[in-house]
Each structure stands twice: as C-alpha cells, then as structure tokens.
Image (cartoon, rainbow, N blue to C red; front, side, top):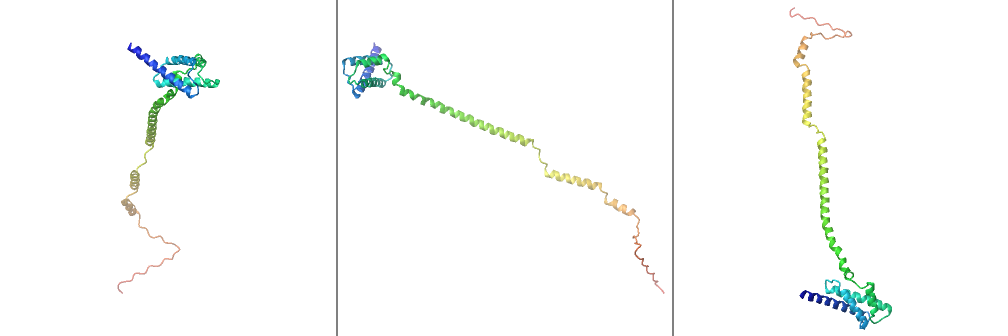
Length: 213
C-alpha cells in the first residue's frame, strides 16, 4: 500500500508540473487557456504525457512547456486567442505531443564529451609506442655502425714498420763482405808501379853523390 501511494503521488506531481508549465507558455503567447473544452483536452494530453518516465520534475516541466509552445504556434497560425480543444486533440492524434526523448535531447548531446576522455588517454600509449620505436631505430643504427667498424682492417702500427726497416738493413749488412776480407784482398794484390804516360818525358834520376872524395 505504501509503494502504491508513493507512485500515485509521483504521477500527480508530474501532471501538475506538466499542466502548469503548458498554461504558463500559453498565457505568455497570448492564448487564453480558460476554456471548458480546451481544458478537458489539455487534461487528457497531460495524463498521456505523465505516463512517460521522468527522472526529475524539471524534465516534466520542460515537456509541459514544449506542449504549450506547440499549441500556441498552431493557435496563432489560425488566429485563435483562446485554447481550442480541437488543436490539442489534433496534436494527440498526429503524435506531435513532445516525448521525454525529444525534451531530453540537449543532455544527450553532452554524452560525446565523456567519450573523448578515453581517446585522450589512448593517445599517451600511442606516443609511448612511437618513442620506443624511435629508440629501437637508434639502437639498430648504432649496431650497424659497430658492425661496419669491426669489418674495417686495422691500420699497421708505426713501430712495426720501423722494426721491419731495421731488419732489412741488418740483412743487407750481413750480405756485404767484412772489413777484414777487404784488407785481405788488398794484400794479395801486387804493389804495382805507377802507370807512366808515354807522352810525358822521363826525367833522369840524380846520380848518387859519394860521401868521400
């Protein structure tokens, strides 16, 4: 029993919010809502709208205002200044009475903003993956440089070149005859006279002078 009473009170509050907001819009638009037939049709329209689920009374107030706006637009187009029940009935038959989905379209538009947050969070892992890829490329480049450096032959050290030159000089010196051999060859050669040029006159040698007369 308690739950049924709470549900009835909720429906009554929703109907009151719908009726008050619809009449407020009609009065603001210059339409007089105090007509017998008009009020009867408006009550039926409010009862139909109250069957929809509303999260808050504010949602019901917005739905009633939308209903009053539609009635006012049709009444002004026909040049009517009083609430006409036929207009309200026409809205119910054609299904032009606003629903909760139509009224709450503005809050629904804010939903994509919440979805944008995971996209921003997903950008961070993508940036981290790109950074890791760049580091891997740098490592591969350094490995290639090290491999090329390992394939190049080492330049001969200068001290080794100097030692090879000294070894060649020692080998040449070993092949040459020693100084003693040169002296022996010179001793074996006969002491020859100086060669006389036949063109030059031969001077007579002075006679030996005796030591005693």
